[in-house]
Length: 399
Ligand code: ADP
Image (cartoon, rainbow, N blue to C red; front, side, top):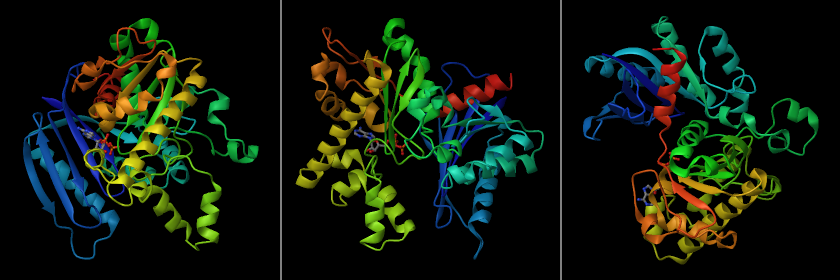
């Protein structure tokens, strides 16, 4: 049997999933796992379809090996493990941050395409080089193994000009300082489920999809196409997140540098890694489960700010979508926290939105959670970014 390998490579981690062919609507990944701690203590965990741990080990990198070598070693270990499971790969699908303006849809990676994608590294220096690294390594090792890239930015290319443009001098806009938007594979997946869950009319109306996890963003769709999104030039803008600040006054950056004398790298760490729920809770936690279980006043304030800002983003997106027919919650928090869904939608009762408390408690499947007399539909739809990438790889290569 042949299989697809799906790779999501980051700066210090490599997440993977394996799907058997042929891929169907209901296909589950037969294996999934993660290599973490690349650059420090590397761990390798692999699980089967039921979540049973098949492998939990460390990868010993040779003394003094650099990050590049450790990434390569990690990928090689993954490939060796895959071979041990007697998996024959038909193709590999990759999550890639940036497709620029060139790629509004997934693409089969050729050496020419890879060159273009490398050109986007300045737009996403924290992710793009790491996303592309395994593509290059695999292309060298297995030149005949087809590879497909699916982009976080692609879904958002249907936004109108005014949704993509920052009010800054045109020169920068022309050179790519625009609202790119991210989490594209998740929105792609959810937008394909909308009709089944909401019915055709609402699915094609003004829908706000809230992908709320450790990182979080929202996208407004009409006719199931993106018309606006909260993340911007980078994944720092928009909602308050686990450790990221979301939208703040850009002058705060100058203040941190001029008044507190932080370097650009330190400011970046503060806004990406020390802000959001973690920062406002006074360093308590970024994890929603810990936060919901705490009585600390700072934690309560952090949660209040989180819900409030999420609701304000929904208001803004409803304007961009020309109305609000439905809200869809997804991502780790969106799918699993009835408390967060209630707290966020409580700010929207003036729209005629009402939740059904019993439906809001149900977990684990796509379903609607609004009350019978609610004027706005509210749904929970579990996302599946790996399946989405597998689907594009399967269909694009006509496997
Ligand atoms: P990432 O952005 O890293 O992919 P996830 O989508 O996995 O993040 O979401 C992680 C978040 O989901 C964490 O804040 C976690 O606490 C939260 N979460 C997961 N399960 C629950 C739950 N049962 N109740 C509340 N929050 C949850």
